[in-house]
Every structure is written in C-alpha cells, then in structure tokens.
Image (cartoon, rainbow, N blue to C red; front, side):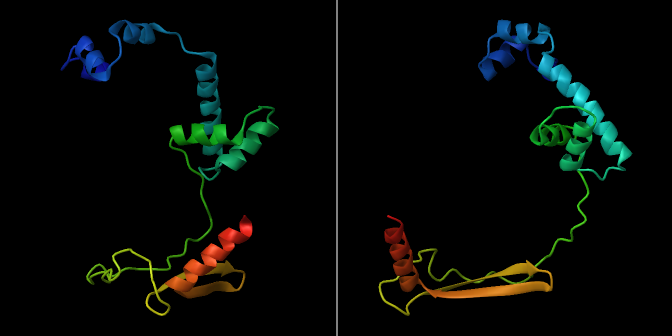
Length: 162
C-alpha cells in the first residue's frame, strides 16, 4: 500500500481491500515475530551454503548441510525459504522431449467432441502412447482400446473393489 500511497489515500485502499485502516496501521507498527526473525537468519545461511556450492545445491543437500551443522529444520522449510530467495539447485538429469509439435500444422480434429461413450463394440477406439525410461534407454508403450470394452473393464474393476 505504501507504494501506491502517492496515488491513493490509505483509507481508500483499505476500503477497496476490505481491511480496517486501524488494522493496517497496527500491522505496520507490529514487531517482527520470532519465526520471521529465525527465517531471515536461516535464509542468510541457506544463501551462503548455496553460494559455497557454486549455486548447485538444492533443498535436500542444503538441508543435510544445516543438519550436519546442528540446525534442526525440515526439508520443506528449506525448500520454501529457497523458493522465496529464488534459489534453485542444478539437476544433472537430462530432460527428454518426446513430442515436438509442428506449429505450422493444424491439430487433428476432435471427431468425437470429447464424448468418449459408445453403445456398440468397434464404434469408437482410443489410443495413447507413453515412454518408460529404463537403463537400456526408453521403451515406448502404445495402448489402443475399444471404448465400450474399456467401460466394461472399468465397471468390473469398480465392482471387484466393493
């Protein structure tokens, strides 16, 4: 609100944000909580560890460093504080791009208009493809299903769980 104080009065901004002006002024005068102070100190330590690692350590390693130093802290808190400081670790894993859409081509038309329902067998078939990473490389898995039979299988599974 202080950034827009030159344009609008505090009372007007409080009215628009549906907060009381007295509550806003009370919030401005409030002292920093112990948790916020602790977070600021931790954030400085996290930034120092991140710098020492040449910006390679992520939350798990920084968490381990803090634990070794005797600081009791959760990994999720480290991750949250790193995110607030815009710090990220380096991942050495290569990402795999499996599909590259040609922007010059029109997408395939939706002939069934997203209604995957069939009254008879062999009327509507659906397919999907995915990849499974293995030590030897990627295995590609393609599945083609008759919608009617798929629905029957789903119903059988649902009744089997009951």
